[in-house]
Image (cartoon, rainbow, N blue to C red; front, side, top):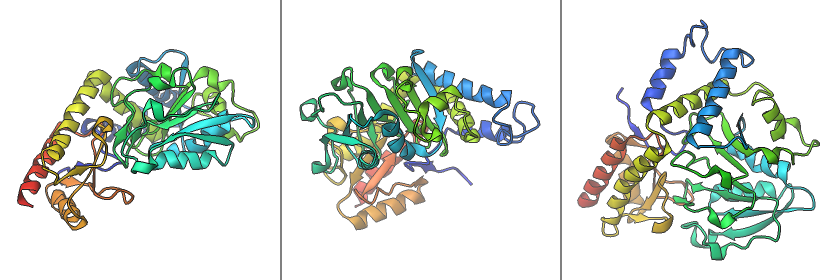
Length: 360
Protein backbone atom coordinates (compact mmCIF):
# COMPACT_ATOMS: atom_id res chain seq x y z
CA UNK A 1 0.00 0.00 0.00
CA UNK A 2 1.27 3.48 -0.87
CA UNK A 3 2.02 5.64 2.17
CA UNK A 4 -0.35 8.54 2.84
CA UNK A 5 0.45 12.01 4.16
CA UNK A 6 -0.45 11.62 7.83
CA UNK A 7 -1.41 14.90 9.56
CA UNK A 8 -2.21 13.19 12.87
CA UNK A 9 -1.31 15.33 15.93
CA UNK A 10 0.25 12.38 17.74
CA UNK A 11 1.33 9.69 17.41
CA UNK A 12 2.53 11.51 14.35
CA UNK A 13 4.35 10.76 11.12
CA UNK A 14 8.00 9.72 11.32
CA UNK A 15 10.73 10.18 8.69
CA UNK A 16 10.54 7.35 6.17
CA UNK A 17 14.31 6.78 6.32
CA UNK A 18 14.05 6.34 10.11
CA UNK A 19 11.33 3.72 9.74
CA UNK A 20 13.38 1.93 7.10
CA UNK A 21 16.48 1.89 9.31
CA UNK A 22 14.47 0.55 12.26
CA UNK A 23 13.01 -2.11 9.98
CA UNK A 24 16.48 -3.10 8.78
CA UNK A 25 17.85 -3.39 12.33
CA UNK A 26 14.73 -4.88 13.89
CA UNK A 27 15.77 -8.55 13.84
CA UNK A 28 19.48 -8.16 14.51
CA UNK A 29 20.71 -5.01 16.22
CA UNK A 30 24.38 -4.30 15.42
CA UNK A 31 25.38 -7.95 15.23
CA UNK A 32 23.98 -8.92 18.64
CA UNK A 33 21.73 -11.56 17.09
CA UNK A 34 18.84 -9.93 18.98
CA UNK A 35 16.28 -7.28 18.18
CA UNK A 36 16.74 -3.93 19.87
CA UNK A 37 13.41 -4.74 21.53
CA UNK A 38 15.04 -7.78 23.15
CA UNK A 39 18.38 -6.27 24.19
CA UNK A 40 18.76 -5.88 27.97
CA UNK A 41 18.49 -2.34 29.26
CA UNK A 42 21.54 -3.17 31.41
CA UNK A 43 23.66 -4.09 28.39
CA UNK A 44 26.46 -1.95 26.99
CA UNK A 45 24.58 -1.82 23.66
CA UNK A 46 21.52 -0.21 25.19
CA UNK A 47 23.48 2.11 27.46
CA UNK A 48 25.20 3.35 24.30
CA UNK A 49 21.78 4.09 22.77
CA UNK A 50 20.81 6.21 25.80
CA UNK A 51 24.14 8.05 25.85
CA UNK A 52 24.14 8.66 22.10
CA UNK A 53 20.56 9.98 22.13
CA UNK A 54 21.34 12.36 25.00
CA UNK A 55 24.54 13.56 23.30
CA UNK A 56 22.74 14.16 20.00
CA UNK A 57 20.00 16.16 21.72
CA UNK A 58 22.57 18.28 23.54
CA UNK A 59 24.48 18.83 20.29
CA UNK A 60 21.40 19.85 18.30
CA UNK A 61 20.26 22.29 20.97
CA UNK A 62 23.82 23.50 21.71
CA UNK A 63 23.17 22.70 25.34
CA UNK A 64 25.74 23.36 28.06
CA UNK A 65 26.87 20.82 30.64
CA UNK A 66 24.60 22.58 33.12
CA UNK A 67 21.79 20.36 31.81
CA UNK A 68 20.94 16.67 32.07
CA UNK A 69 18.83 14.74 29.55
CA UNK A 70 16.43 12.11 30.88
CA UNK A 71 14.23 9.55 29.11
CA UNK A 72 11.16 8.81 31.23
CA UNK A 73 7.80 7.05 31.00
CA UNK A 74 4.24 8.20 31.58
CA UNK A 75 4.00 10.79 28.84
CA UNK A 76 3.79 14.54 29.34
CA UNK A 77 0.71 13.92 31.51
CA UNK A 78 2.86 12.40 34.26
CA UNK A 79 5.06 15.49 34.13
CA UNK A 80 2.02 17.60 35.03
CA UNK A 81 2.25 16.12 38.54
CA UNK A 82 5.97 15.35 38.62
CA UNK A 83 7.07 18.97 38.19
CA UNK A 84 5.22 20.35 41.25
CA UNK A 85 6.00 17.21 43.30
CA UNK A 86 9.70 17.90 42.79
CA UNK A 87 9.83 21.70 42.91
CA UNK A 88 6.87 23.13 44.81
CA UNK A 89 7.44 23.30 48.56
CA UNK A 90 4.60 23.76 51.02
CA UNK A 91 5.33 27.45 51.68
CA UNK A 92 5.90 28.33 48.01
CA UNK A 93 3.75 29.29 45.01
CA UNK A 94 4.16 28.31 41.37
CA UNK A 95 2.88 30.38 38.45
CA UNK A 96 0.99 28.83 35.53
CA UNK A 97 0.16 30.45 32.21
CA UNK A 98 -2.64 28.55 30.48
CA UNK A 99 -2.88 28.93 26.72
CA UNK A 100 -4.71 25.70 25.86
CA UNK A 101 -6.17 22.43 27.06
CA UNK A 102 -2.86 20.80 28.01
CA UNK A 103 -1.84 23.86 30.00
CA UNK A 104 -5.17 23.65 31.82
CA UNK A 105 -4.59 19.95 32.52
CA UNK A 106 -1.15 20.73 33.94
CA UNK A 107 -2.72 23.40 36.17
CA UNK A 108 -5.40 20.99 37.43
CA UNK A 109 -2.76 18.46 38.48
CA UNK A 110 -0.57 21.09 40.12
CA UNK A 111 -3.33 22.52 42.35
CA UNK A 112 -3.67 19.06 43.92
CA UNK A 113 -0.09 19.38 45.14
CA UNK A 114 0.44 22.98 46.23
CA UNK A 115 -0.29 26.68 45.88
CA UNK A 116 -0.74 27.70 42.24
CA UNK A 117 -1.18 31.21 40.86
CA UNK A 118 -2.61 31.82 37.38
CA UNK A 119 -0.24 34.41 35.95
CA UNK A 120 -2.19 34.63 32.68
CA UNK A 121 -4.83 32.80 30.67
CA UNK A 122 -6.19 33.13 27.14
CA UNK A 123 -9.38 31.19 27.83
CA UNK A 124 -11.49 34.33 27.33
CA UNK A 125 -10.69 34.29 23.59
CA UNK A 126 -10.81 30.49 23.24
CA UNK A 127 -7.02 30.30 23.33
CA UNK A 128 -6.49 31.99 19.98
CA UNK A 129 -3.30 33.79 21.09
CA UNK A 130 -0.34 33.93 23.46
CA UNK A 131 -0.59 36.55 26.25
CA UNK A 132 1.45 39.72 25.89
CA UNK A 133 4.05 40.66 28.51
CA UNK A 134 1.65 43.30 29.87
CA UNK A 135 -1.01 40.65 30.51
CA UNK A 136 1.23 38.40 32.61
CA UNK A 137 0.97 38.94 36.35
CA UNK A 138 3.72 36.96 38.09
CA UNK A 139 3.47 36.22 41.80
CA UNK A 140 6.18 37.88 43.97
CA UNK A 141 8.62 34.97 44.05
CA UNK A 142 7.37 31.87 42.19
CA UNK A 143 9.23 28.60 42.65
CA UNK A 144 8.77 28.08 38.91
CA UNK A 145 6.65 29.32 35.99
CA UNK A 146 4.94 26.73 33.78
CA UNK A 147 3.96 27.23 30.14
CA UNK A 148 2.97 25.12 27.13
CA UNK A 149 5.19 26.30 24.29
CA UNK A 150 2.94 25.15 21.42
CA UNK A 151 -0.77 24.49 21.59
CA UNK A 152 -1.54 21.50 19.40
CA UNK A 153 -5.31 21.91 19.58
CA UNK A 154 -5.54 25.67 19.07
CA UNK A 155 -2.56 26.25 16.78
CA UNK A 156 -0.74 28.92 18.78
CA UNK A 157 2.96 29.06 19.68
CA UNK A 158 5.25 31.06 21.94
CA UNK A 159 7.78 32.99 19.84
CA UNK A 160 9.61 34.94 22.55
CA UNK A 161 10.66 33.82 26.05
CA UNK A 162 12.40 37.02 27.14
CA UNK A 163 9.51 38.01 29.44
CA UNK A 164 10.58 35.29 31.88
CA UNK A 165 14.05 36.74 32.52
CA UNK A 166 15.69 34.82 35.39
CA UNK A 167 12.61 32.93 36.55
CA UNK A 168 12.71 29.12 36.72
CA UNK A 169 10.83 28.50 33.49
CA UNK A 170 9.29 25.05 32.95
CA UNK A 171 7.91 24.30 29.48
CA UNK A 172 5.84 21.50 28.03
CA UNK A 173 7.36 21.39 24.54
CA UNK A 174 5.75 18.15 23.41
CA UNK A 175 4.59 19.51 20.06
CA UNK A 176 7.35 21.90 18.99
CA UNK A 177 10.61 20.73 20.53
CA UNK A 178 13.41 20.79 17.91
CA UNK A 179 11.27 22.72 15.40
CA UNK A 180 14.11 25.25 15.32
CA UNK A 181 16.99 26.65 17.40
CA UNK A 182 16.26 27.24 21.08
CA UNK A 183 18.16 29.00 23.86
CA UNK A 184 17.91 26.24 26.46
CA UNK A 185 19.62 28.44 29.07
CA UNK A 186 16.31 30.30 29.51
CA UNK A 187 14.70 27.15 30.97
CA UNK A 188 14.93 25.29 34.26
CA UNK A 189 13.17 22.27 32.78
CA UNK A 190 11.75 21.23 29.41
CA UNK A 191 9.64 18.13 28.92
CA UNK A 192 8.21 16.60 25.76
CA UNK A 193 6.22 13.51 24.96
CA UNK A 194 8.08 12.02 22.01
CA UNK A 195 5.10 11.08 19.85
CA UNK A 196 4.76 14.39 18.03
CA UNK A 197 8.19 15.69 17.04
CA UNK A 198 10.74 13.26 18.51
CA UNK A 199 9.70 9.67 17.85
CA UNK A 200 7.00 7.15 18.79
CA UNK A 201 4.77 7.12 21.85
CA UNK A 202 6.20 5.60 25.02
CA UNK A 203 9.01 7.89 26.10
CA UNK A 204 9.10 11.44 27.43
CA UNK A 205 12.26 13.50 27.07
CA UNK A 206 13.16 15.75 29.99
CA UNK A 207 15.88 18.39 29.88
CA UNK A 208 16.65 19.60 33.38
CA UNK A 209 19.11 22.15 34.73
CA UNK A 210 21.33 20.32 37.16
CA UNK A 211 20.90 22.76 40.04
CA UNK A 212 17.18 21.91 40.04
CA UNK A 213 18.07 18.33 40.96
CA UNK A 214 19.34 19.57 44.32
CA UNK A 215 15.82 20.80 45.18
CA UNK A 216 14.12 17.40 44.86
CA UNK A 217 12.67 16.23 48.20
CA UNK A 218 13.50 12.71 49.36
CA UNK A 219 9.98 11.97 50.67
CA UNK A 220 8.21 11.60 47.32
CA UNK A 221 7.87 8.21 45.58
CA UNK A 222 11.10 7.14 43.91
CA UNK A 223 9.67 6.87 40.40
CA UNK A 224 8.71 10.56 40.55
CA UNK A 225 12.16 11.80 41.60
CA UNK A 226 14.16 13.51 38.88
CA UNK A 227 17.37 13.16 40.90
CA UNK A 228 17.12 9.36 41.05
CA UNK A 229 16.52 9.13 37.31
CA UNK A 230 19.48 11.43 36.70
CA UNK A 231 21.78 9.45 39.04
CA UNK A 232 20.86 6.27 37.20
CA UNK A 233 21.20 7.72 33.68
CA UNK A 234 17.50 7.07 32.93
CA UNK A 235 17.99 3.41 33.91
CA UNK A 236 16.48 3.48 37.41
CA UNK A 237 13.89 1.01 36.14
CA UNK A 238 13.31 -0.75 32.81
CA UNK A 239 12.89 2.14 30.35
CA UNK A 240 10.82 2.20 27.13
CA UNK A 241 13.83 0.91 25.24
CA UNK A 242 12.46 0.72 21.70
CA UNK A 243 11.02 4.24 21.91
CA UNK A 244 14.37 5.62 23.11
CA UNK A 245 16.11 3.84 20.23
CA UNK A 246 13.66 5.44 17.79
CA UNK A 247 14.28 8.89 19.32
CA UNK A 248 17.98 8.36 18.69
CA UNK A 249 17.28 7.58 15.03
CA UNK A 250 15.11 10.71 14.69
CA UNK A 251 17.87 12.84 16.25
CA UNK A 252 20.37 11.36 13.80
CA UNK A 253 17.98 12.24 10.98
CA UNK A 254 17.67 15.83 12.23
CA UNK A 255 21.44 16.17 12.25
CA UNK A 256 21.58 14.80 8.70
CA UNK A 257 19.08 17.47 7.60
CA UNK A 258 21.57 20.16 8.60
CA UNK A 259 20.50 20.87 12.17
CA UNK A 260 17.83 23.08 13.70
CA UNK A 261 18.43 26.26 11.68
CA UNK A 262 17.72 24.29 8.50
CA UNK A 263 14.72 22.59 10.11
CA UNK A 264 13.29 25.97 11.16
CA UNK A 265 13.48 27.25 7.58
CA UNK A 266 11.96 24.00 6.31
CA UNK A 267 9.07 24.19 8.80
CA UNK A 268 8.33 27.84 8.10
CA UNK A 269 8.21 27.19 4.36
CA UNK A 270 5.84 24.25 4.88
CA UNK A 271 3.53 26.21 7.17
CA UNK A 272 3.53 29.19 4.79
CA UNK A 273 1.96 27.02 2.07
CA UNK A 274 -1.00 26.11 4.27
CA UNK A 275 -1.45 29.57 5.77
CA UNK A 276 -1.36 31.10 2.29
CA UNK A 277 -4.21 28.80 1.24
CA UNK A 278 -6.18 30.06 4.26
CA UNK A 279 -5.41 33.74 3.78
CA UNK A 280 -6.18 33.76 0.05
CA UNK A 281 -9.52 31.96 0.38
CA UNK A 282 -11.60 35.14 0.85
CA UNK A 283 -12.92 33.89 4.17
CA UNK A 284 -13.79 30.36 3.05
CA UNK A 285 -11.11 29.11 5.45
CA UNK A 286 -10.90 30.91 8.81
CA UNK A 287 -7.77 30.38 10.88
CA UNK A 288 -8.30 29.94 14.62
CA UNK A 289 -5.05 31.51 15.84
CA UNK A 290 -4.36 35.23 15.62
CA UNK A 291 -1.75 35.72 12.90
CA UNK A 292 1.14 36.86 15.11
CA UNK A 293 0.81 33.74 17.28
CA UNK A 294 0.38 31.13 14.55
CA UNK A 295 2.11 27.81 15.10
CA UNK A 296 4.46 26.33 12.53
CA UNK A 297 3.56 22.86 13.83
CA UNK A 298 -0.25 22.84 13.97
CA UNK A 299 -2.42 24.82 11.58
CA UNK A 300 -6.07 25.00 12.72
CA UNK A 301 -8.96 26.47 10.74
CA UNK A 302 -12.69 26.35 10.13
CA UNK A 303 -14.83 26.15 7.00
CA UNK A 304 -18.25 27.79 6.44
CA UNK A 305 -20.12 25.02 8.32
CA UNK A 306 -19.65 21.58 9.87
CA UNK A 307 -21.08 19.74 6.85
CA UNK A 308 -18.48 21.39 4.64
CA UNK A 309 -15.77 20.40 7.13
CA UNK A 310 -16.88 16.75 7.02
CA UNK A 311 -16.82 16.89 3.23
CA UNK A 312 -13.32 18.41 3.33
CA UNK A 313 -11.98 15.63 5.58
CA UNK A 314 -13.56 12.88 3.46
CA UNK A 315 -12.36 14.24 0.13
CA UNK A 316 -8.88 14.96 1.50
CA UNK A 317 -8.58 11.34 2.66
CA UNK A 318 -9.43 10.15 -0.85
CA UNK A 319 -6.39 12.14 -2.02
CA UNK A 320 -4.09 10.51 0.55
CA UNK A 321 -4.30 13.42 3.04
CA UNK A 322 -5.45 11.82 6.29
CA UNK A 323 -6.20 12.66 9.95
CA UNK A 324 -7.24 16.27 9.32
CA UNK A 325 -10.25 16.44 11.63
CA UNK A 326 -9.89 19.11 14.31
CA UNK A 327 -10.09 18.48 18.05
CA UNK A 328 -13.64 18.31 19.39
CA UNK A 329 -13.11 21.42 21.56
CA UNK A 330 -12.36 23.59 18.52
CA UNK A 331 -13.82 21.63 15.64
CA UNK A 332 -12.86 22.34 12.07
CA UNK A 333 -9.59 21.17 10.59
CA UNK A 334 -6.18 20.61 12.15
CA UNK A 335 -3.07 19.96 10.10
CA UNK A 336 -0.13 18.78 12.18
CA UNK A 337 3.02 19.44 10.17
CA UNK A 338 5.82 18.40 12.49
CA UNK A 339 9.45 18.07 11.41
CA UNK A 340 8.90 14.72 9.69
CA UNK A 341 6.05 15.93 7.46
CA UNK A 342 7.57 16.16 3.96
CA UNK A 343 7.33 19.42 2.02
CA UNK A 344 5.35 17.51 -0.59
CA UNK A 345 2.66 16.77 2.00
CA UNK A 346 2.03 20.47 2.67
CA UNK A 347 2.30 21.24 -1.04
CA UNK A 348 -0.36 18.65 -1.85
CA UNK A 349 -2.57 19.81 1.03
CA UNK A 350 -2.37 23.47 -0.03
CA UNK A 351 -3.19 22.51 -3.60
CA UNK A 352 -6.17 20.46 -2.43
CA UNK A 353 -7.37 23.34 -0.22
CA UNK A 354 -7.33 25.77 -3.14
CA UNK A 355 -9.16 23.35 -5.43
CA UNK A 356 -11.74 22.51 -2.73
CA UNK A 357 -12.29 26.24 -2.19
CA UNK A 358 -12.95 26.82 -5.90
CA UNK A 359 -15.39 23.90 -6.17
CA UNK A 360 -17.36 24.89 -3.07
